[in-house]
Image (cartoon, rainbow, N blue to C red; front, top):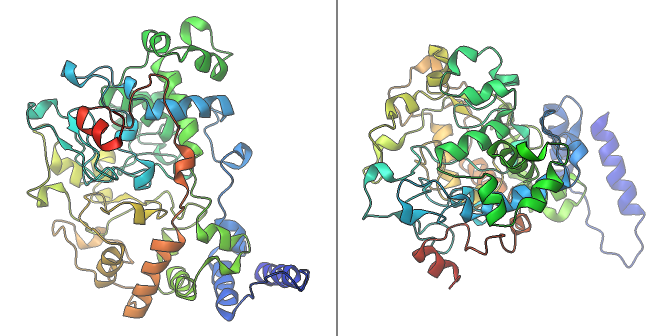
Length: 446
């Protein structure tokens, strides 16, 4: 019934236009795609997949303990990009040279732009983050480098836990995992994963946001506006900074992508090839079984046998990275063997802006990932067959379907206007997202 209503609405809209208007005609592909969406959304149809506007706070999923406000978002937008937050480095020369955005660039779809995100002791930016490398003159144990591919911040509002293994978050998906919170005491604060990550990340990535930071770099007025109900002697803290950053991150929605425009009725927003790709995505490809809803992700964890950083001589691993534990994914957190080698479902928006895919960054093209899942030959041979996702190697897509799905994910799911989420400047006046000499030259800050 829902799909018939949507088709009827499109027809009415088309008939209501004047003769002088250009009126795109809904094709058989549009009708077929609407029917497929209706089937995979329990009758909700296109509306089930629509992302809200970024200022529509009432319809953005949020933590009840951290209601989104425009004042928090304004503060968080600056703090995430502010290189002056890099105030607790192991090497003093690196102070104020990095930020959260060093590993989450808007131009890279809020991913890192490189296989490994590098905070402190990273140098350079290149044109799109791809030029960031480790400073070769510093001790390895001083480098803040990630042993997994940094997930995007896009659409994180639709997650209640964070990281590939989902260890950050004290509610929802992580209910019942309290025994595993020994090293993540922040989970006991009762926040969801986005908020917990923003708190814990300041410690992990050597950031420092406190009263001195607030007063030195002119953030007092912004904190006052964001947290007016918090006593002043408790207002300028890393926890409140984290709540502002998390509120901002929840507004990072890829709601201007062609797919979103098509869902809202612009039938010419997608090419025929992309529509065929969407039909395959929500049909024979079975992608919707994990990639569903507005963000095209669920809250589950799956194993597709993808490789890790230890299979590449180019990856930088530190002695305390415990790569064998990292490879176990969700199982390393829950200590449940059934969770071993399973990783969180990522959103698929703006994948085209990054060049590394999978938790280990072992893929460099979208088509490569689709073909890999279709073929069903795991990169990581340690994964027990019973832990592999049921969709792995069982979808039997044709080459044409793979090409069409590649076009859909590459083009239809790419929001081309993510720069709207980036501040023109930060309060310190520093270069951002990086502020080392090489990055400053790359970014044209000097």
